[in-house]
Length: 285
Image (cartoon, rainbow, N blue to C red; front, side, top):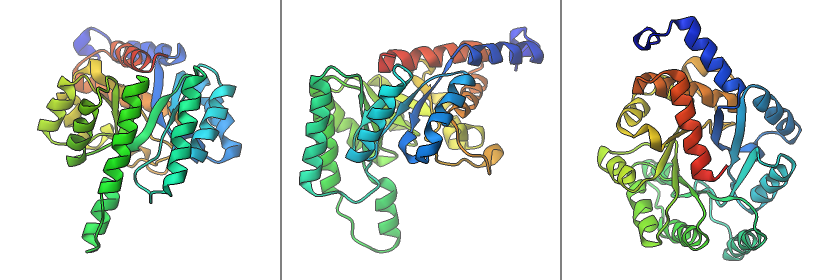
């Protein structure tokens, strides 16, 4: 690959190393609060030393949001929090959700920097219920996602989505309904039709290190414009293939960038610069 662009392998690796050292990688989706409390600071410090410029710390629920806000305040400018409710878990009482929304509005009123997320639809939970022959009511999750989409549209905040396969079309309907401009579908999988719809709407997609071994993700990268791609790890979620047995850390997002470069037939440094610019622009970093 390097030779095709007039670089030898040593030159490309040197340029890539320089890029990461200069802070050319942002992990656009990380569950920072799911790492052990005593590990979080060292995880971030190591990441920044390895060339990670920043991370986007997504939340699971209100308590998770509070933790991520505290970490973001300590690592100002390098940890960008996102507040929401992850859909692959039982819904809490309505009063708890109301408290979360009120808390997010307080952060907005205070002029704080944040995104909405992780929010979406429970594809995997619904699939497990179906395979077990159990009923599953998706309606409350759709209503909650619409509530988050409406909030993102009202506050003009980026929204981070867990919405794969047929759920992506449902999410797109809600985003369009509420005029959401900045939508980020993380670790996305879906049909070519929904991919075309998302791309036409200007929505972003982030790619994990599993692009190294998952053909489905490789096809997605080939189909999506590089100007609408970002990289992520979804840590601490573990990976397979060449990463089997390794703890997930933010700098692994750089590996996803390298594979994107190969698929898009771009020099690694150019791809890294584009992906970095995409993420900075989308999140205002």
